[in-house]
Length: 386
Image 1 (tube, helix red, strand yellow):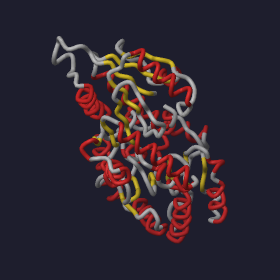
Image 2 (image 1 turned 180 degrees about the horizontal axis):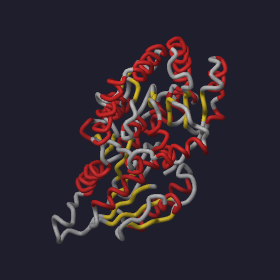
Image 3 (image 1 turned 30 degrees about the vertical axis):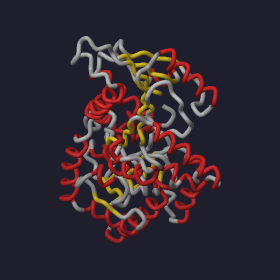
Image 4 (image 1 turned 60 degrees about the vertical axis):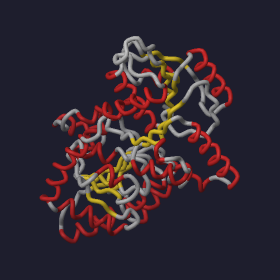
């Protein structure tokens, strides 16, 4: 669970498997502190410590030795990897996106890019089955790596259960006012801070929106709050704020724990997420679960994820983003419609439903049906790479 997105996925899938499958034996291989973040699990789940960076040769051999010792029937690797895996049993793999072969690939030399692509292709070809988190991601894997569609199963993500704990109370809003000095209406962006997330255009659209609202004498205290990591690595965001003269109206908060993030979602006027590329895109669903209207992109997986419950925009057009934000701010009828649709859309995605699909594939690949169906069948042992 090295990355935030992969960690969220692994934690929730393992918890769901724990609720649904008491027959198979599971080994959670990874740093014990990361496994501990999953919380209590039934007795058929066991932690197997594996420390260090999983991209090293030593870690690779340690991992193989663990799988041999455990005599696993199947391994589930919860993210796209590229190091060659000559594992002693079949493996399935989850692909969240192929971003490393698109936007991020531009940062590599031609040789590194080609080697990375070749090794990733080998890893995908070697998988007994691939889980793609959206139809969009499935089509990207098919097109980019020529993997047959029949070997790719679409298994949707869902939101963390902590986002489903009702609306923010008065005490919650007081916490925002006292700890974060937020006592004014605001638009919200949450997520990673990287070029494909399009945060520069959010700031530019917000600047244009403020000028428009000033003419109409509406929402004079409106702010933009950006919650995300690694802000220091992106000085272009600060430069955009200064160029737009938005120093007093745009706030960067860095990392915020989920318990507080849910209050921000709940209190926001609009959640704005015009990302250029998403393999799935959880934040819009998290906002919808709180009844917050969403403005997001009409590209990649986002239309598939948000359905008819958000306002979709061309993420490369700053004025289209601005006009959508303005409309959602001032049109109460539209806000009410988005709120009702958003609740329904967020409910369509479930970790238990995802785990049921994954369990079916586990049984197909290992060719061992569930023990509860065939009592005399030996139980299946599975390893999950944490």
